[in-house]
Image (cartoon, rainbow, N blue to C red; front, side, top):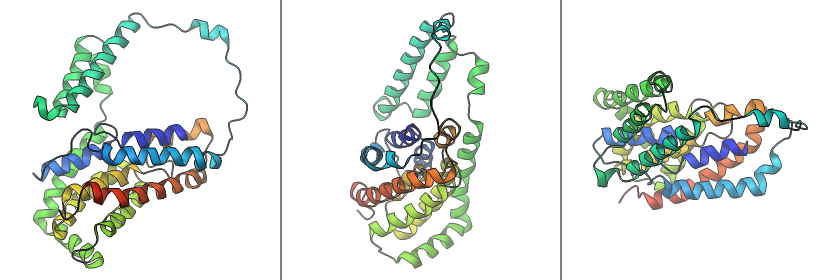
Length: 290
């Protein structure tokens, strides 16, 4: 469970770390209102990660049940049989080089003038060209569900705007929080809504559904959309209280023999820690009403 939670926390630090970050950036760019830098998410992601680590090493680990039993000792004979496939070391070296080069290109996107999606595609093509991957392996590695989710939700933002549905939703939210509401209250409400939803559905889907709505709400409040969308992206990534909100949580259910209540017991307090840190820091880093 700490491994799964660490993957979720670390993913908040960069644009490429988790799908919600890429989604809120895409929505922001689609609105022609700016963008988020590759490491800009780290301004809140690093404090959240530090807070999460402190929670896990002081309180969280005590709440994790141990149902794994005594593991069998590894068979030395089997270990000796393990060997790299032919050309494995060379392929690993190329893969690491391409990976680091792609990350550097993403980091310096603005300076190089190369969009991050172009850098990513060039990196993938380099792996195919150098025979590290076959074209079939590269094709099968594409997460088509996420791609269609991205492409389908971006037009929804336009539809919400042109149909008036977005304004209706924004007006409802504004009537609740009040015009000129405190940025901390806005952050808290958005985090509760998005953070609650992401526990029971894919964090990618939660961000994709709510990011376009958040943009309309930001416009209705006269707030900086960057602050609102950052709240949505971070809250969507805080899927720690159930095993279904994010793939790392799901992957460790079997090996750890975890139950649904185990995630609530360990993950819900972590979500509360994320909530407190986010409500305090996000309005300070990205002022809602500059």
